[in-house]
Amino acid sequence: MTETSAEQRVTGRDREGVAQRLAADLRDGFVVNLGVGIPLLVPKYVPANVEVILHAENGVLGMGPLAPQGQEDPDLTDAGKQPITLMTGAAIVDSATSFAVVRGGHLDVTVLGALQVSGGGDLANWYVPGQNPAVGGAMDLVAGAREVWVAMEHVDRKGQPKIVERCTFPLTGRGVVTRVYTDLAVFHIAGGQLRLAECAPGITPDLVAERTGAPFVEDLPG
Amino acid sequence: MIDKFRADPQAALARIPSGATIAVGGFGSSGRPDTLLDTLCDLDRRDLHVFVNNVGGDLTGIGRLLAEGRLRRITCSFPVLPDFYTEYFAGRVEFELIPQGTLAERLRAGGAGIAAFYTPSGAETMLADGSFPLCYDGDGEVTERIPAKEHREFGGRQHVLEYGIVADFALVKAYQGDPKGNLRFRLSARNFNPLAAMAGRYTFAEVEHLMETGELHPDDIHLPGVFVNEVLMRSNTSPRLPVGRSS
Image (cartoon, rainbow over all chains, first blue to last red; front, side):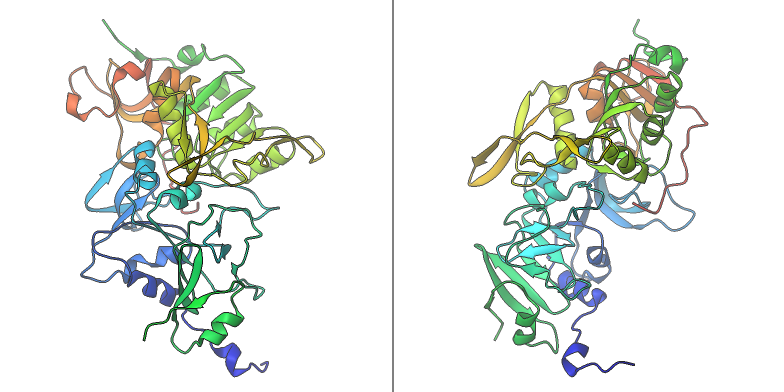
């Protein structure tokens, strides 16, 4: 066992906790698109008195949980090509109509993972140079959704901040992110300004500052 | 009398020449016209430019076209197949990467007589600034890039100019079709199929069920037969299952 300092042991929220914290901010009636990673953990934490309509890019409004083993229907998948179920009241549309929902301002929130977010709300989440490029609907989602909420680890695997002054990875969209939920904090971004809205339990603003690569203003409750 | 049913896929698709541009429906293996794609391979067509959302996760469908070296260029949003990237980086296929919603709207626009449109998707990214490699040579050097897209500001936001797609042919898959070419899709297998069908100058539809004229209620037709030239039965040897649990 290696020695770890008290500070390094402070881990804030785990992935489930980040999803749960984000889910608490979803409002009744929201139409929501979820990306891969932590965002996919969000549905199980949506409060019982809140009904959200889950949108999948391939033309599903009212997506339900993954289909149980043995009950998969090849004609019914999510945007990750996994077999799904539908909620009562679901609707199916073609891909052009699906992206009319996205770009036309009819999607309240898209929840995405990120490689990097800049303090001004630029998002990089589609391509790591040197790897295989693919974009899917990410650029449409960030351009069109009324709000773009990022759910991610606060730092990368090497401990480097993922919230940065300027993204070094290729951008998905410029100035599009409105909120960031991490294991350490919740940030709001408005008017190109990064604001610390909340620290995770046991986390201080100083610790957040230490692990954040962009300046922010504190806008904590109370 | 209008009767668009055709019994023999090989005879029907024989009119597609090498070098053709082809819009293809489907999202992954869901709604993918496997019988038509297999027939195209059997006909030994080459130098094709295909517009499709995915290069599937296996060597069926578009994957087979790729593996057999039949593609000159692919316009898509999300290749899945690792072999695709091998071919791309080796300079054996050109790759026009575009956002998924842009692909859908370009097909819809082309089929609807809209020459071009402005969309915010991809503005100020490397898919619009002229830097993304369209193709490589055999030594890994970029020989051509996707041209920079015209940017224009609307309502204080940057948009890019995108062009409608009109393809020589379209290959789509539906659940039901009738002799007039009217189609009905099933669940999320609809996806790009009606859009690809509209974008094709000559459209082939592969269906699971051939219906009699009048069996499909006018209100239940997802795509009218005016967009469809020939209707063929899906081969029962075409793959349907399994649906992969990977992306």
